[in-house]
Every structure is written in C-alpha cells, then in structure tokens.
Length: 433
Length: 172
Image 1 (cartoon, rainbow over the protein chains, first blue to last red):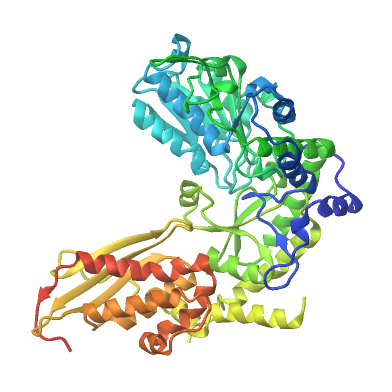
Image 2 (image 1 turned 120 degrees about the horizontal axis):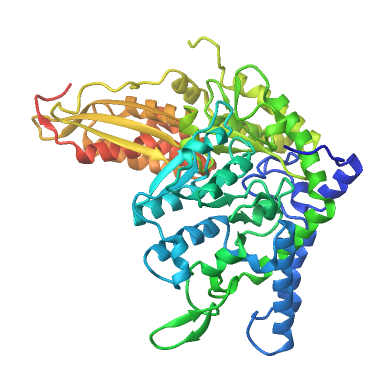
C-alpha cells in the first residue's frame, strides 16, 4: 500500500527531468524519446554521472590499501557511499555488502548456504546447512534471478523447492503462508514487487510464518527500493538484494543486506584478495562482514555514484516519489484499458507500482513493441526474465511499460496514442483475404 | 522532428512489415504438424528464441530420389511468435518444399546473407533466388528481430541434420 503523500508539482517534475540528460535526446527516427522501460534500467541524473566521473578525475586510488592520502580519500568516499545506501534502506553500513548487482547478491546468499552445507566455514555457519528434504520456498512471480539460484541450491543439497502461486491478478498468494511454509522450510526467497505485474507482495504474513518455523527470508527488492519507501529493518527480512542501475545509479553494482549476526556466520563464496585476515600456504581466515564478501578490486566509482543516487532519492523523499508514481500507475492502467488489451497484473493502483505488462489480442508483444518504438515509445517486450509467471497466464510474452520518478503525463499520453494504432496496423479483427 | 526524418522512419517500419509479410503472418502456410515422427524420413526440431520465449516445432519429411538427391517432400510446423517469425516460417515452407538438400542449403545461406545486410543493398542474385523471402530484407535493420526471422531456418537445418531419408521414386 502506498501512503497518500504530497506528489510532485509540474515545476518540480520539469526540474527533475532536466537532471536526466538522456531524456532530452531524440530517437533515431527524430521523435522525442518516451522512455517507459525504467523497470529494466533507469536513466541517470547529472549528480550521479558527475560523481562517477569526478572520482576518476580527482580521487581515483585503491581503497582499503595503501597509506597515501589519495587512497584514504577514496576509501572514505567508498565507505561513506555504503553508509548512504544502507541508511536509504534503513540499515547500518556494516550490514550492506557491495555486489556486482542483485543477481550476484542472491547468488552470494544461495552459495553461502551451499558452502555451509558442504561443511565450509566456522561451526557457526552450520545454521545455514541444509539437509535433504529441507524446503526452499519461492513464488511463481519470481524473476529468474530469484529462482534459478534456489533451484541450483536445491540440486546441490537435496533440498526441495516449493512455491507460492499467484492469483488471477498476479498477486502472490501470501494467504497460503501457513501451508506453503512448513516446519521443513529453511529459506523463503520472495520478491517484494514483481517486475512483470508490478504487484506489491504483502510481506508481513510471509515473514511472520517464516520466522515462526525458523526459516530465513531473502527478499528481492530490485523493484521496490527505487519506487517505494523501504526499510529492511521494519520488514524484518533476513537478507535483501537490490541493484543500483534501476534507481538512477550505475550498472555493475548492487547491494546485499544481511542481518548483522547472519552475515557474521555466512561463509564467503568468492575468495581472494582483500577479504582475508591471515593467509598461510595452506589456509586463510576471513575478514568480518561486509569485507568478507568483497573479494578483489571493487567498483569504487560505481559505489560512490550509487551513494549519490540514494542521496538524490532521499532528498526528494520516497513518500513523494511513491505518490507521483502511484498517479502514473493509475494513468498507465487507464491507457491500457482499451478494447483488445489485457493487463497481466493488479487492476487496483493501490496494489502495485507503475509497471504494467499487457497483451494485445491478435498481436505478438514483439510486434507491439516495434510499432510503439516507431512512435518513439521505448517499452520492454518478452518474458522479462519471468518465464514461469508468463506460463501461469498462458502467454509466451508480454509488452511492459514501466515508469519512474521522471515519467510525466505526456509520456503516458504518447504511449496511449501509439498503443491505439497497434491493432489497426496489424488489421486485427478484419477478415483475411 | 524534421519531416524527412519522419518519412524515413515510417519507411523503416513499412519496410519491416511489408505487405507480403503481413499476409503470410495472417495466413501462414505449413502451420499445423502433419505426419508422424514414426514415419520413415521424418525428423523434427524444436527451437526457442530465449529473448522472447517464442518457439517453433518443425517437421521435415525427406526422400532420396533415383538420382541420389535428397529432396524435401514436406515441411510443417507449429509454434508461437511474432508476425516476423510466423511469416518467415510460412515463406520458408513454400520455398523449400520439393527442393533438394543442396538447394535448401543455398537458400538458407542466401537468407542468412540477407539478414546480414543491416539494411544495406541486397545482392540482386540473392533477391531473385529468395523470391518472397527477399521481403525480409527490412528485418536486417532491426538486429533484435533477426533471430525472429531465422528461427524457422534454424529449425529446418536441425531437422534435416537429424533426418534419414527414405528411398523412393524420383520426386515430381
């Protein structure tokens, strides 16, 4: 649920759009760009672009090594960014691990469990060891990134994969928590917001039931953190993954949150330089978190820019961002409420964010996307890395429009106009011959 | 935007979706699998386009005629996909039935070269050889769509590699 809050006025929105230089470029066809693919990746504002470049121009040095002042400066900026991103999601800096993205973050947890099961790590790591027949619970709405790592973990450990279904509007059936999550459940890996349906998962019953049986909750927060006020501490999830590039930050960096006591016991997955304490020719001891999970040279400029992206959103206030995007969700739903178009996802804007996937009767999603692109409207087409969810709704592919902070009414109007031409272009409904 | 750019852009879309492609997409030839995999000389291939989840199951029936040439007696297919992939399957079906394997290899090579033109000039010889399939030239300007047009051709090549031709009378 999105709280009613002050939304953006036109002047504010115009100023925000001016921060995103790419929005001003024309399409190859010469039209104004209507970018409605922010769920795939967001555009970047000047402060983020500047931060990344400034680091290379003025402060580039190895972090956590070297005694020189440049290295100190880089280290301080790197760690201060960790604090900015952590505080943006309501947690402490030492509970936030840099990863190459959300996919890597989820794999880090899954393979941490696998290592614990293989007996790697201190005795405390045994809390993560799985037995054959233990259960891992996911949902039918998962992005492949929060499904396949768990399939792999099940294959390695003999654990059994179970899942929540979704209802007709794509909402995860959290009302079935008591039966889907059992005494054998050890992990519940679930999406906060679906990247296909835009549905917001009501996490409270899932987390309560998971903790009742002693299972860990791993949250895929990729689509929630950029669009809603999110506080992992309040949600009481055990691990959470999100990426920078969907929230105005650079590609190549994401973050894993883990409760302090859990990260302390989790064995590392990627090993090598800088994540160690003492190394001999036969063994090594590992640094405390978060450094333990950050082997090798880190994407320092990207981390600093990620911090600036979190700051950019903080300064606006996520309640305001969410209120603006709730209006866009309603507008996008109106735009697709035309004959021959079916929405895959919640019809109530309260249950969702401004990500709307749809099917045009008689026209394949690729063809829909092509005609929209011809009008300068950039949308995603395909299965959006969620094949099981598409199979659930009996479709191979959908077209998806997704808004962000910088999306305005004009964008939605251009999309609506272009969408209204699609069925005519392919002569749907006309007799052949 | 300048009007000349607009005209060029619209032309790209019209060029991608030429009338012949739209016609084949709406009335595809060869759609609906025929025969059985148990029949001699029949082989099948299932191909997917992982970026969009599109798929095709294609069945080919081949026979070695008296002159020793292996010839395609029939092609049928089932699948779901965009208008480009459906039309390409349809046009290919019409093009290859009755042809020898060598001729089909030449056609497939010609079609691939058409897909590689990136919107540039098409070799007139290729155009003539491909007939209706030359209408897919516009697809080469859209790299994301090339796989759509190639899916049926990939399935055909795979099915032909698997097929053991039945010995038969000279075809046609």
